[in-house]
Length: 223
Image (tube, rainbow, N blue to C red; front, side):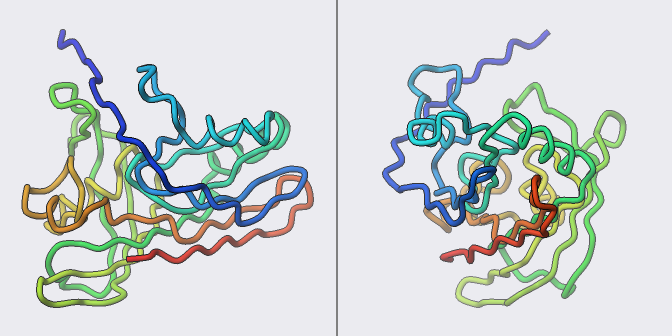
């Protein structure tokens, strides 16, 4: 058995969390890049979205997460009942999530679907891997927004159908167009082409857990 040790220590994040909407049930926030969603086991990784929010909202509960490097929209529950109702929506895949990303090179097709099963890669934690034998089905839809030159880049809108760990990062890499700034999937060159992971949760749609109103959060990427 391979012993998995997480030695990652997050550098300080000096950017604030933006509260975009709040009522008695939920918060809709814009998470900065470089901030954990939840505090890690390592005491040096205490700072996180949850750690910050409970100072002002003691009952805040995390319904879902964004990767450390991913910025953008998150919905936060303000009590256990709301958390349970929102969790059901995520499990039923009725929550619509869209991400803006910048990929290396020019993606040939204007839109398409990516189907690569994803499994844990215990030899290279925390990386995931494409594996048809042990991987769970994973599906992402993409639409090209813009093709740029010098260097060749493609801005895309991703709509993940499933929600596997690192799904958009590994799917982008598997199709030959790694996300710029990604330190896990890609090359030293694509990692160095951006100072951060260029992946941003730009749209989030869900039913308000108490009123049933369709909520649509939009927060444009700054890249």
